Amino acid sequence: MPSSIKIKITPSMLVDTAYLWLEKYAKNEVTLFLVEQKIKLELATVGMVYRGDLWEDILERMVVSPTGWQEVQAAWQAVKASLPPLVEDIRAWQFIQAWVSGHTNLQAINTMEVVFGPRFIHAEWMDILSTMINVWENDEDGSKTRALFKKIMTDRNLSLPPLPSQECHLIVHDLLPLGQDDDHFRWGSDSSKKQK
Image 1 (cartoon, rainbow, N blue to C red):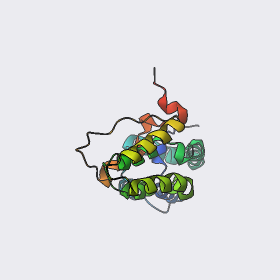
Image 2 (cartoon, rainbow, N blue to C red; image 1 turned 90 degrees about the vertical axis):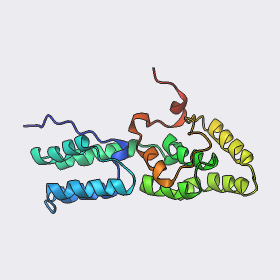
Image 3 (cartoon, one colour; image 1 turned 90 degrees about the horizontal axis):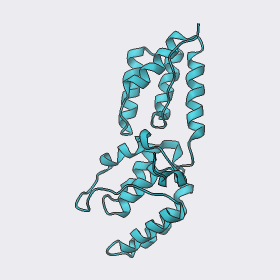
Image 4 (cartoon, rainbow, N blue to C red; image 1 turned 30 degrees about the vertical axis):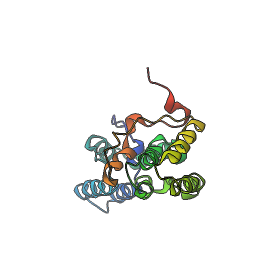
């Protein structure tokens, strides 16, 4: 009898190390308690919040349905395949925005590597970042770097929400939640359209 549980995988759940623990659970290599603790730990490592309701639905599906693990795998891969390249993901640009605005230092790039994992392909960002860093190195007040960033955003048809006031200085930990904003997971030209 098919299960009535609906599998919901969100983009922020796509943490490869969490998937590996699901796989261990599917193979009966770990207990339910251990897999929940390990997933919480893996998510916390990259600044993600463990949404118990979502993860519990997935784990329950794996228990009650003989094809549960295959269903979870299919749902996971479908969400992963639907993601755009990271250079089109508005969440990634918010890390660059924080750096350009003087709210943080270059650790934002390292944070992107941690938060987005294998989606952060350094080669896709090299031209953008090297150009911005070259301008930034010779820009005492940051105005040229901000102008370049604004031009890049315009050229890519992206619109980002404003950051807190200039007096605020974000640390890497403050930036981590930007990677898990599933409610505002939009990219490309769609990000500049207002929801009705």
